Image (cartoon, rainbow, N blue to C red; front, side, top):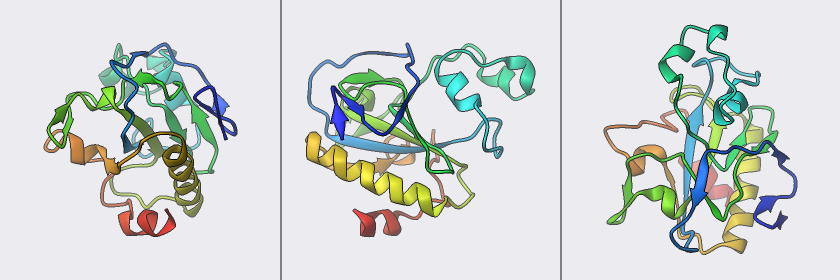
Length: 174
């Protein structure tokens, strides 16, 4: 299901917002939530944002994020469709200033998975199903030790995936 660090069933939308990891030790999955504009679903703006093609004239909120260069490895849309922006062996720019278990800069050793959603909206059944399958595949291919939220690695700075994400459900599925 992973071929040359790309998920075989994901739609590839390559981003240039990545660089090399300092080592091959990939041990963490970080779950995020994103929607652009906030709370609006079912469009192409996340893909545009992660590939530096976001037309800021499309929404006033986009002025706030204009010029940012960010990415994640994967996006799971509310429909269950999966988009991959960065191969897993590369360092996507999803975590920002972060630390986990005494190790700083989680981008160096993590895989970032964005769920189309907000901190407060409930996620779709299909998103949980796909996320659990992806976690299983990643655990069989890399030395994944933990699955955490962005809020766990950047407390006080980030709140996603938020109260709408059911951690018990994902733990039961994996």
